[in-house]
Image (cartoon, rainbow, N blue to C red; front, side):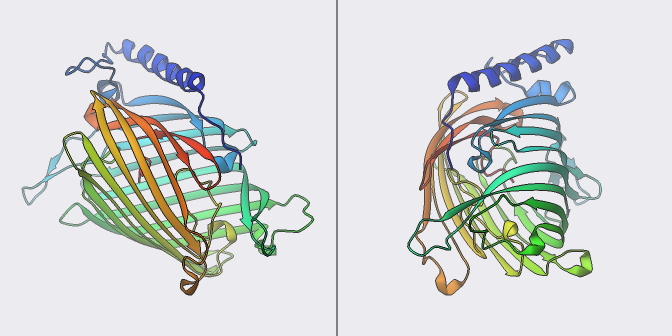
Length: 386
């Protein structure tokens, strides 16, 4: 898959749109976009006092979607003050995030949808809801030719998706658990192939996924956008069955750990470990894959995937930071074949700017090298944003 290298003109143009739109709106409310502490450009007060509305024009850089495209993401952020529970302990509340997205990419993929992440404060419930429709052109790979490279198959998906998760906080609010649900209706268009994709089952052409699941998590990060310290642990599963209206009988289990630790005053280390396994007969497009910067989505798949990634953030000067990161991963079908194929790697660098100090929200660009090519990413918050 050909990746597009970053263009400074495109990045600056997007930043100019972002700044000009928000400065114009902030002036209506007489709200400064300069921070009261250091005088630097900062959107904290704008987000808090101007109803938290920002429009983010961004560049789509996912190699699996052609490597280049654009999206408009209007987002509302609502900051909550900490509350005192009945036990007298202070409970911090994550900001509510409400938004929409419209995107179009170089390979004629497009999508429109909306999302919300928030907290029912009195009920101590964390929830996420998202829905959308997309017409996506994606590449999948198979090795059905001995001693030859993997073969690429370009497929078109017309899909409707709905996802929701509701987690009840325990007495210790860092712990939460609850149900989740995924609905996905897809129609796949197969171009004429001399050799049809070996991984496509006839029932995959037009299918419905209905999955019920649950999740339990511990979130001790100091903020949800760009953490400086703390860990997040999560284990979740999905169950798909015709009883739920699904065309497939399958299970999927995921375990993830993400941690951040200040190695010094200006150096923050991060580590991510994730594992996923599918049971039964899920459709090929829901098989576990490798999610690493520099590697196209769905490039490497199997019934089991293991991903590790480490990163360093060096806060060089005032609000500016440099990033360095690298990762290893593998996808395979059986544990007795674990790591039989070469382990996939990626590495890269990037930068961040502290865009909203009161939210600890940073934004920047990452450039990554995988086994095959370079890719770049516009990062809002953290690349490990969950």
